[in-house]
Amino acid sequence: MDRIETEASGGCQCGAVRWHLTAVLDTSHICHCRMCQKAGGNFFAALIGVPRDALTWTRGAPATFNSSNKAARGFCRDCGTPLTYDYHESRHINLTTGSFDQPERFLPKVQFGIEARLPVFDELPLTAEGTTEETMAAQVAAIRKSNHQHPDHDTESWPPQAA
Image (cartoon, rainbow, N blue to C red; front, side, top):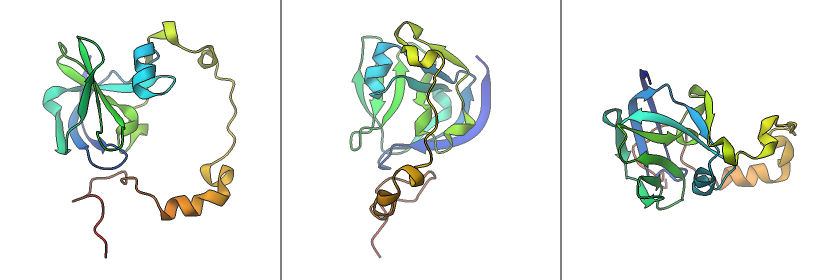
């Protein structure tokens, strides 16, 4: 595993937990194992390894659930966003790629846990149906107006102070 020096930040959906890193490992991956499916509430978990000495929690800290005697899953106590997979004996911790402010910078390179991979992902025969604006046109304005999601960048505080 190569260490790649870089700067990145991210956090949970509500902004209660934020982090900053100065390096990642070249381990960006998708894990299809049943434990990752349950922890992410999804078909797979997208993760990337980060050296422990390269990660700083800049706002709050994740709550944890010991998913086994060997590993814990970190998440935001307030909004539930999955944030980490921490194998206790490892020199690195895995962050959920979707919690990065710019997840497109860390595309997965490999898949693990393929014993539980759903057959649809063998070839993914799904077609794109359009943008959020196109598929939810009537709701988009109301959702944007009432959006409580933290923006994809660091802020001094959150939520924003009322004017």
